[in-house]
Image (cartoon, rainbow, N blue to C red; front, top):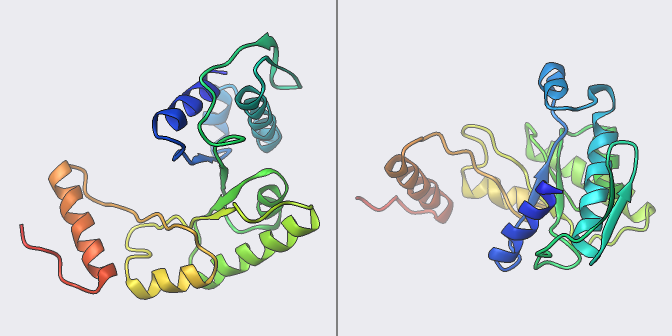
Length: 198
């Protein structure tokens, strides 16, 4: 309920620009400490998302499941996006992960090694989503770049051709001036010009 309210508040405050990226984690000890059921973590996450969707859409919301159980409550504000902000699943390119995205996610945020691997995942998700009767018009495909990845105009063009709707670029700097400088350099490379001198 708290996470649903936080997401809705951020989406409302930004005029409907919030993207809700989720994952289920990989570390058993961390998952257990945080109350997760590691062996069934994706089932648990799926139920959490289903409960949040009820909180985002119903004026009076209640949910009764294995992991989430609450009586009728009022949860406001509602998100600006209708019916709710897109739930983007962060996962590698494997059959089970892609099936999750196609069946109940609103997009995919993968860590992949190549444009070809990304394109393969996008095509698989599209095929699975069509078979599941999902509307693909609002799906987001956002490759998550690691250090040095996706930082040239050619790479971005290839990702766009493969279906990317956005690209996340890794920033290495930690202080504000360093971050701004790094962003300017990346923008310069992507726009085909040298970064402006400070």
